Image 1 (cartoon, one colour):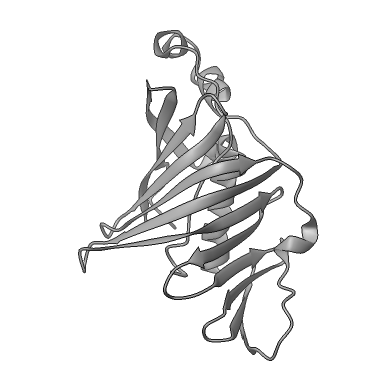
Image 2 (cartoon, rainbow, N blue to C red):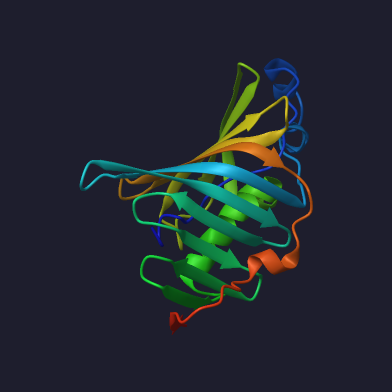
Length: 217
């Protein structure tokens, strides 16, 4: 879960005119119309993780909050594993597991923190990723736009491609699927988006109790 919560996910807005008209425009203009940025987002999500080695799919659900610059909170609430939360306030990543009464703190430069921040960039400001990703394809059907991104460099990443689906009417990213070199993939589906401001305090772990606390990095 720690590793594959990774990317995750997800992005902000879209305005698609017609495929033919967009194709005639410079690529910068084309994807500026499809992608735009937002400051805050709260969504319900479903995470579907496929493990190739075991040929097994795991589904989890919950809600998430995102705010610039790169802050997030994931609450996994509907799962036999019990309540599980991830917090990132810009300084520290915290992972809480209620079943084990365990709190893990990670440094901001830890691999897990970098990957989760990438997911939030997909959600809030996907255009910022164009320095690292190439747009390989885009399609429009049923009032949805799907864009395929591939890393410009294979160094420092195990991602082969990312599919981002934007709901054109409400202008938000409703689906992100991340494909990895090892054949695994993770998909986040979002619904019930709200763009109201998130208070900074929600991104810091504040639960009271006698927890086992571990610090990493």
